[in-house]
Length: 191
Image 1 (tube, rainbow, N blue to C red):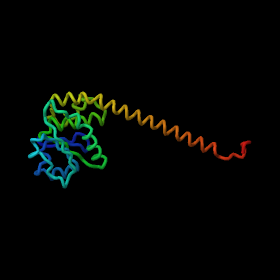
Image 2 (cartoon, rainbow, N blue to C red):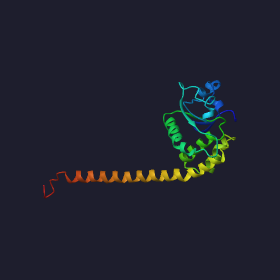
Image 3 (cartoon, rainbow, N blue to C red):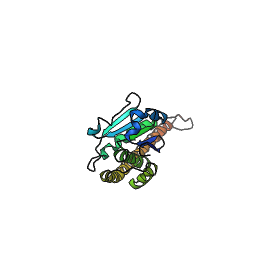
Image 4 (cartoon, rainbow, N blue to C red):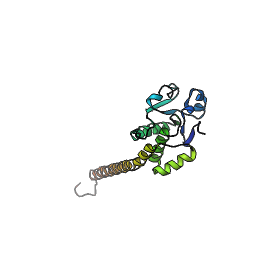
């Protein structure tokens, strides 16, 4: 299983570079893959690269598998890319070299934010499907740090939506009131 990709949630796959290699084009097509997130370090660019730019939409991220690497900065970009792919009925493969650390951390962040899960719960779910995931300790720490960040952003978005709804309701009420006041009522003595 380590050398193949697994479907983590419907239409989102996690796997190694081998799953996106030239020899596996037919497998990508058979799985319905439309979008690929290719995670590599600059020094890996000569052998981990988009192999089929004419067939799939790619997001290429240069991330070192190093505990001091800032991976959290990529979480929102990955979420947007995956959400856009899924909303257009696409299917996404996220891969690094081995599909164990960097790409797994990105998928974990996506699962956490999308389903409102803790880092520990998301890890359990993903590991049950792809047993070999093992993000480095720096990435795990950043995933734990990300939990309150995405929750605060969600709360803020919900608050803004709630405020917008209240403004909308007030505006509708004002329009309805104005329309009612401007109608001619023959029973009204001021008419």
